[in-house]
Image (cartoon, rainbow, N blue to C red; front, side, top):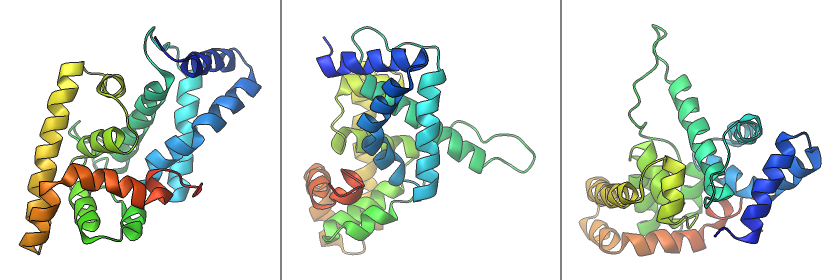
Length: 217
C-alpha cells in the first residue's frame, strides 16, 4: 500500500490537472529539489531548470494515471527520464533531419559533482560513471543516490522487476570494467572496484551539494 504522503501526491496531481494551481504549487515545491538534482547531474543550471519545468508540465498535461499500488515519486522520475532522453536525442539529431537511434547516450557530464569529490576513489568512480551509457548512469544514480527500490525503478524504466535486477547487475559490471579502464594507478583502480558500492554510498554523504540537495540544506 502507498504511504499517506504518496496518496496525497496523487491527489494533488489530480487536483492540479483539474485546474487547482495551489495543488500544483504544493506538488512542485515538494519535489523540486529531487528533480532539479536529477537534471543538475547532467546539465548546467539553466538547462536543468528548463527540463524540470517541462517534467512537471508533462505530468499535469498527461492523461495517464498513477497506477494503483504505484507511487508518484518514481512516476515523476520516469517523466524526468523521458524528458532528459528527448533532450539528448534532439541535441544530437543528425544533419539530415533523422533522429539518432534509441541506444542510450554515453558521456554525459557530472563536473559539478566531480569538483565536490575530495577522495581519489570518488573522482575515479565518477569519471568511470560518466563514460557509461546514459540509462546505466541513471539506473545506478537512482538506485544508490536517490534510494529507489527495484519496484520503483521498474516503474521509472517501464520494465519488469526481474529485468531491473538484471540491468543493475549488468550496469555494475560495466562500471567495474570502466573503472579499471580509466584508472591510471592500478592500485587505485583495484581499491575502487573492490568496494565501489561503498564508494557510491560514501559519495552521497560527502557531496551533498549535487547528489542530495542542490540548495545545500
